[in-house]
Image (cartoon, rainbow, N blue to C red):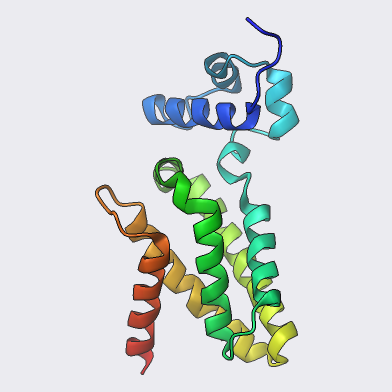
Length: 186
């Protein structure tokens, strides 16, 4: 066996998700993950602080990408700016990894500790979006409301997108969710 193989982080993530599916998050060890991925524990800890980070490793990248898109956008309304940023980032980061993202979401939804962490990450993302919008529009209350509304629509779209048998894109589901939100609030 060669000493080095490419894509260690992805292989570790794949191995971890397989094991989480088979035996649950709590019962899976780092040793089992690295054995399945045919890597070492040292390699694992070069990429992840612990096994939870396998599920949350892209959170900071996601936040940076969304904030960058908001800052670069020229949409008239704060809500439109966030929605456009979420659509662009969904296309770039999620659409070609639907199966992996859905498996990740299922593991998180089945574990209260992980779900709590996911909600915390979403709250931090909402705050970062609000800060980016505030920098664009100058009104902190409008920025906060637009960020929260867009994230609510994104979460609804994401739940639908990860359901078995769903074939629509996350972008299309997000557009539908925003349309429903706008009809709901009038």
